[in-house]
Image (tube, rainbow over all chains, first blue to last red; front, side, top):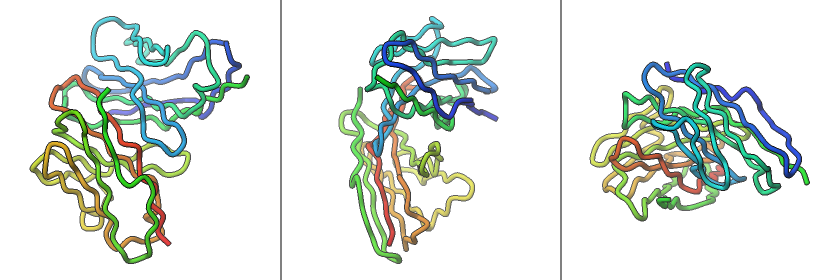
Length: 115
Length: 116
């Protein structure tokens, strides 16, 4: 069965410092991996995705993520955090065999960036 | 990115009444739409998947007669919560995808439903 794990409920970072939000996944086929961000009382905004190709994926707002097949991880990173990055971040996976399949979401990680 | 518009953003209704939530893809054809429910401080739980012109596929535990989903066109899907009860109060989010297998899903802004 497909699953996504976000081991941290909350990540606290000082503004200007690098941030990492962790995600590990489990799928039976090739994974399609996604990161979304959610601001309070809003829907999800797409940040980036990994389908195939380069393991380092660059996305919106300066975020990037590294696909690591051996560790089945897809951690979200940013070199220098902003206070405005504070939000709820969701990692998601879609089984590559089912291209029309729905996304399976992690439980979310709340990122708090302090000035 | 593509735009998905969800309406209304907030609704308050009385117990026993029905509420309809609309989800529209504004600049692409959404062959597949998904409806999610999100409880406070929790992840999104998939309720159902709908393909244009077909009956929705509901996840286990989701009452299809209570949560009516219609996907009559490539740009519009609706979720109707029938005979709403206070326990149906939640944040409902739709998402839409095109036909390309590698495309990401785009999400609506969400609807905060409060049943009083």
